[in-house]
Length: 160
Image (cartoon, rainbow, N blue to C red; front, side, top):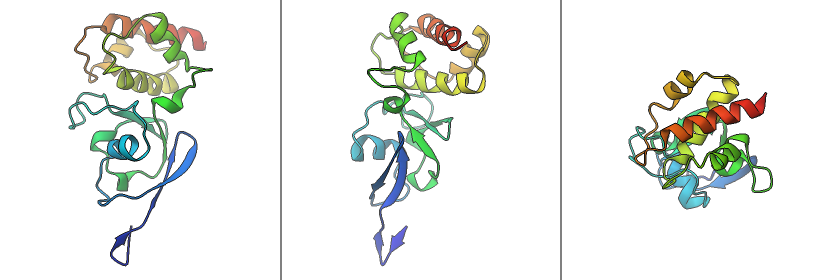
């Protein structure tokens, strides 16, 4: 919001706390605000076009590509990988990804976990095909797809 020619601080709910951010342009991508202003490095810059999934966060529980989501369009609660679980109490997906050693370079893992968490929230017991379909638009260059799918299935089993 512009007040007297100056952009007013924008309140934002991130990982359970309300923060106030100030940007020069309300169309600044949410990803830039999360990384540069708030120091959250779970969401990654991948393609910048919303096609790879590395920047995925949740807004009110829905998986959203933060690189193409302008700050001005964010009105709900944002959760990043850092807010999904803690070091002491990791999210079941985070534990499953570790147990399945589903990470090689780790660049895509933020998106894989965040997309999978949204899936499990809406479908706690997805089939292998449903998991693959959900993750089809998340790119991984290392080839850990089989381990990623196993990790999601493990997490789904741990929930029930």
